[in-house]
Length: 257
Image 1 (cartoon, rainbow, N blue to C red):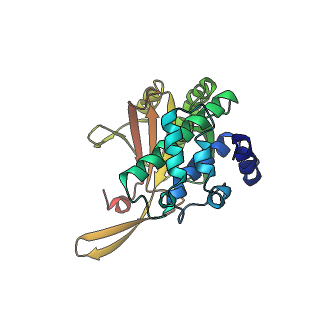
Image 2 (cartoon, helix red, strand yellow):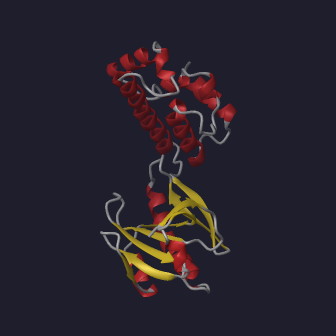
Image 3 (cartoon, rainbow, N blue to C red):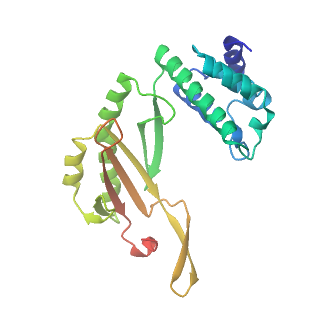
């Protein structure tokens, strides 16, 4: 199948293919072709015609090694066993082609100036909020970096608003040893002034006593989460972070900690 035909086929599955969400979903589908049971495919054509996967690896200029691997991959039905790869060679071929597909999709993204940022909507403590986040599957354009950095103050103020709603949460900074140190809203704002990106997420648990001094927790959804986390990225290389935690004042919610 030619490269043009491949993308025409995929466009029938999803007319929004050439968007940040569409390209990200395509890469996610490609990665899950070996483990299809627990993944909802945006592009079911990948399942119906497995040749699309190696064909996507040919979308750009390829060398002789890639051509050899594509031929070997197409000739080996075992590559599509849903319980994984039988040999190291099969695993190598699958991941090698996936990296090629990533490179080709990223080249398309750059050529078409498709953003590497998606909008995330969250609703904690009955407060709805939407902010831009980096898409894990795609690359950041220069304009994306500006969007993420400009969003930092809004994310931080949303986090502090959640902390201060009665019943007010307990606010902590988190050090490198994961120790929780009581802190202030001013300290959070000062740290945010150095940040390039900010992300917020929450977690809650339902606890069940399974022994005299033993409890087991399972994830739960609560309007007032047990903990709300703020992550500040201090560089674009994902090497430096600052974390802040907000804990519900009801200490029985933190049995696992």
